[in-house]
Image 1: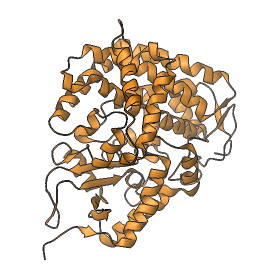
Image 2 (image 1 turned 45 degrees about the horizontal axis):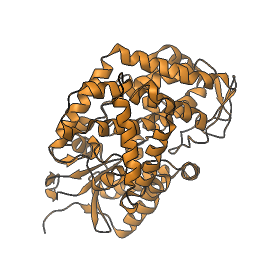
Image 3 (image 1 turned 180 degrees about the vertical axis):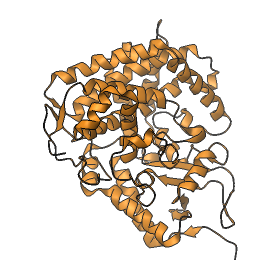
Image 4 (image 1 turned 30 degrees about the vertical axis):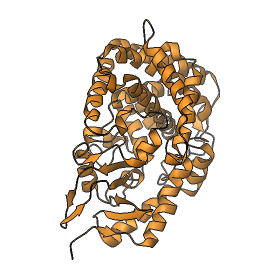
Length: 431
């Protein structure tokens, strides 16, 4: 008999679907549903999902497990070495244009780099690199970002309480100004359109495409590129040469979408630091340490819950078996980011792992992915996050909601950012 991968039994498939996949679908793959986030956080569903994957590894070994669901085959990765292989061979043997991901993102950004197949992907990647590098290298961009953050954060410091709704509203203004320029500061309609279409994306291929809304979003995005003096990333889009098939506005739409994970990570970072006065004091004065704190929050509670690829060619795996082209390959971020068998710091807040190289050495810890598909906007995102948190850490905050973010016990695998609340002033709070 020809060798083959380990195949999950039907009981394992049911467990993976109900406990591993269902919570992700319920909370929303593209746009989080606050009530669902609160429910799965109360149940700590990521802890359950991690236990299932750990049990599979314990029973079958570290090799990947093949799962078949409704005729669709997916390879579930259980070892860090396999994650490294898949990420490093992206655009060679694997593609980010996974079938399910494309079904979700095509609702609001069908021309984005992430779901572009074939040779066009390299051309769009080159354009994205050039446009973003133009911003990263330009002092004008960093000065504009810093001014936008300082202006939008100031009202938050004037209040005595801080909720996620207030924080996110301010962050959306920051994001609009960074992506489209200051002219978009009050364009709440463009954010509303994006989020309506993201909500459709939560249903993957089950929701009809709303072409009218998608066209309106594109027109609004295009308007900021066509201004006499565009600002933000729109200025770089305008200045970067591109053929028509590159669809520069579509690339900018993806930046607008991808940036929306930042307020979640930043708000949870603030929660972690509010419970740790010494680390908070260090973060106020050490920007590199503060960036490490943001990365650590993204390790603990990844905003991208799974790295998904499709195989584009037959691939050979240890044991002598072949994976057919067109198979989905699935890496669960909460499992690898908190792998207690492999990471001594799995369930505690330890920003130092991002400063001494330990975290970067682990390709399975991938808040911004790794390899050829690593997020091009990583530097802009982290710079913005550090600036936002520097402004907020000028005040003392304490958690007033019943969140378990303190250092006295292992941190939960699932965190509810939507109901996290702060009050100005000193005090331990319930965190």
